[in-house]
Image (cartoon, helix red, strand yellow):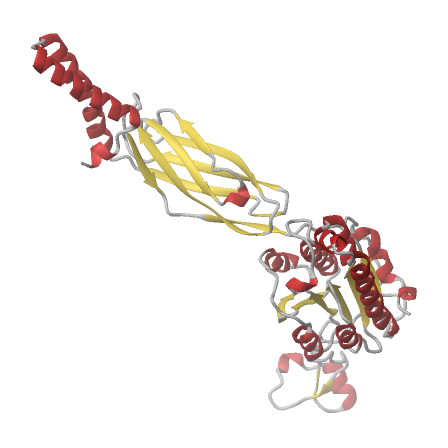
Length: 428
């Protein structure tokens, strides 16, 4: 019964034609037609028996190069099939499983594979959407040379392609705090454990004798040990506004996706300078990135989604509780006066604070969604005026508290406005 289920439409047609010819031969008494009918019936049945009973053993591996790409970039998937038996295969129909975001399912036809033979297949995948996308499993349909029978065998192994947000290279900018003068490229602050002085100190019970500083011991006349040295560590916090109601538009060009891309670009830029970065959203603390390890931040941002939160209170609380941040950068959508005041209080002496404000009115004008409905009722201009007034009020509060505010309209590149982050005059 399994063999009959493996018949292709062509195989079923052969079988049906043979049965019809057999009936006609019996009714008409035509012996030649009977021989033809038997031959037609035998072909799909023999092919089915051969294919289903032949124990093909195939090994498959998959390689993604690279396994992490930015949105819109391509990755090459390499499939390797190996016939690990001593029997040659018939025609192989290979199909890999992909999610819709990565494109259509790739299908390939491989001719007869010899014993111990190996075949490699390459194909490209890409996605304009962020996320973690499974690639696989692979399925192989084994067919006879006449195309009468197909037997499907599937593998279980899958791989994962990580599509990260688009990262825009940013120009170098001085982000020194008030206490660090103009020499540093970023604010430096000591970690919570403190920064021990490198001078020797008195020996204490339990100290490692290998840390004894003999020169100071001889000079002081008592046992002295070296203090542990800790490198001065740069720390910062990155706040990303993920609230659904605070953004406009849909798809890759929405204000939310632009905000995620901006956060990724800033995070990669600062991480390359050795900054230990905390990622915070309106839901609270999300991730900590050590300097030089921006891939972990990108993996987090690849799967981040919009939230249903209505305020930034949890994000502000996470920034306040973290402490030790010499630099705070906030990528923000719609901001009301109360939220701006809460953010403004985070700016303390010695802390550099930068706000990237998305100009949501430009997204409304570009999409026409809200504007078209409001203009039809005669309220479009008034709504835009209210939104602009709210944005100006929030901006005024932040600049008044010493924040450096960058306006990012729809269609603009973050690299074009980023130099303003180093301009102290952008903070009132």
